[in-house]
Amino acid sequence: MNAMKAPSRVARKRLSSIKPSPENLQLYRPVERSDPEIVNLAQSIKKHGLQEPLIVTADGYVVSGHRRYVALQVAGQVVVPCRVLSVKRSDMPTDEYVALLREHNRQRTKSVVEQIREELIDINPAEAHKALRALRDKSVYGYEISGAETLLIEGSKVRHEISGQKADHVKYVKQVVFNDRKSYWPLSVRAVHYALLNYKFLRNIPRALPYKNDDESYQATSDLITRLRLNGEIPWSAFTDGTRPITTYNPFSDAREFVRHEVQNLFSGYWRDLLQTQPNHVEVLCEKNTIYHMVLKVTKRFQIPTSSGRGFNSIDPWNELHDRYLASGKERLIVIVLSDFDPEGEMIPQVGGRTLRDDFGADDFDIIKAGVTRQQIEDNDLPEQNFAKETSSLHGWFVERNDGDESVYELEALDPQVMLDDLKTTITSVLDMDLFNAEASREQEEAAYLEAARKTASEALKGIAE
Image 1: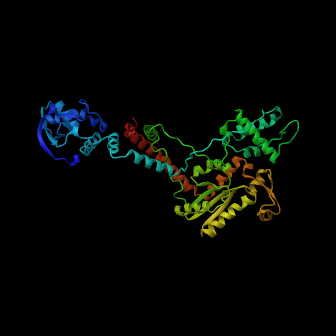
Image 2: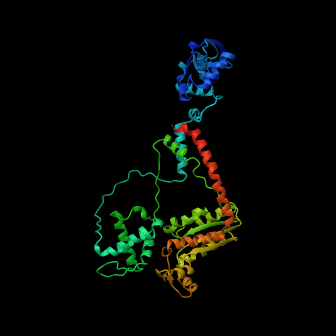
Image 3: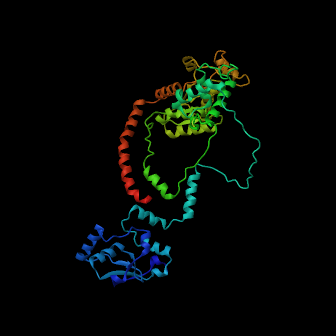
């Protein structure tokens, strides 16, 4: 027989013959005789009688009415009206009995914790875990390795100590890392190399080799930085290799720790759309991962989508960019590009424009190069890295458009602050700053509302993590 649909009869029973169900504590908080609500209910029972009978099993266990049961005790009642179910607690498996308690207490007012406990009755842990994994796997892809053999490591790696002959080289590397470009951590080796060109020193005494913009000097700096990081003179956090991404995980020790974390950080991820009233959809494209984190210092403030395309040598990133523009509903698309001043870097905006126009049929768009530009080269007296490679298929095109000049310049040759200041100027020139500042002001006003909501909700949810 289905316990949920078990027939019942109304009877008067001695209160002393009735017992609370121990399983009730799996779902609901304990009932205290001193609880003001219980005291008030007991006074009401004395004055008006019990308005709703207890529901009990055939063997005398309370199914619904544990609070009324305690109030009846406080009121000193001896005989009470009951609706007696035809099922016995002793005949039912625990999980079925807990479900019976839940179904007969649907109407009662419950705390958040009690509601969660009720919901847990119907949740299959295996299915819930499967769903949780599916949610996590939406953004993380991996594979399982089985039967892999470990390698025998052959040979050894020896790094020589840094000799006194490199004292000047060490001094200026530290000057760049800890002073000149400390605010732009993590750095790239190439950025440090270009910054070292501002100092006149010999990189290897007594051979008296001047530090200059060549491969030998760059490799010497790369090797020196590695050794300085290994011996602890430069922290590992000062540098990054943006060309080699890694995925790590931040798991929790248990579900309660996760809930506590979420409650503590409730409503902390709000971003008002500061660009929602802008007429233009603006995006920034970096040619290199090595400057990507620096660029974000500017674009994050304006909430401008920022991509590191490493040349954007496939059509997919341009398709995704075009889709974002269409989804924005804006009148015009503006793409701001940061790329080297070399044949490939100068061609990136051209390829992007042709792709948007000829492949996707876009016509309301502009592409702006914010670095490296000819004006920046002249204003900042940038050191040329080399000359355009004659083997490049774009060599002739590049030299012709630059009036025969074959000099090339990398993004890292720009002082970071110059690059970021010029980028900010470009961005503000294509945004309606009055509209942007109005949205920013509204976000500030909303902060108070969010704080009030967070405190209210956190208090209501506090018991969940206990």
